[in-house]
Image 1: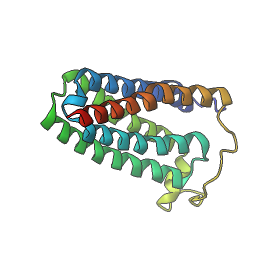
Image 2 (image 1 turned 90 degrees about the horizontal axis):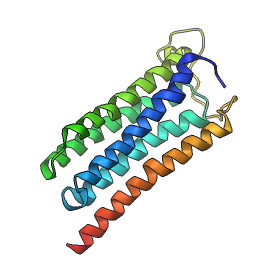
Image 3 (image 1 turned 90 degrees about the vertical axis):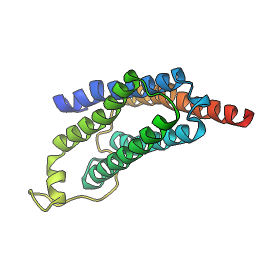
Image 4 (image 1 turned 180 degrees about the vertical axis):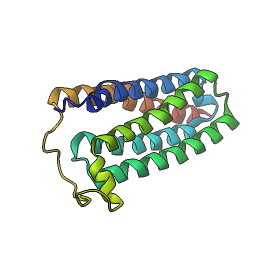
Length: 183
């Protein structure tokens, strides 16, 4: 495991705060009675955003960071931001988006950008290589990490993701589908 302060901050601060913000957003949706207001459509948009966040996160956890992974992270971030704009545009027509939820959204938008900046900082030569700069050529190979993250760290993070992201957002979708079928 890297002793680089940037990697440690990314692993033990940025990612946990991001996951906490995702759970806080679900709590905001629960408090806003999403199943009776914006319903299934907004919940499906949330599911799409979870997928857009999961792809680069899982890639960073398991694959060597190179030009391909950095490109995937940047592309996923741009797509996630476009989807977030669609989400908030739709949500505000169907329900009240509280100031607390707006604050949570700001975390959900900025933290992935911080994470990408940290990853680029840690793999600067591959970032430069994409643009033809630096001493090494860009690598576009998908390969498992040569120095994997510790098993305990992966187990804890994946458990947190399942418990505080996957299950709550799946519950939200099922709650919205159930409310929709009653109408």
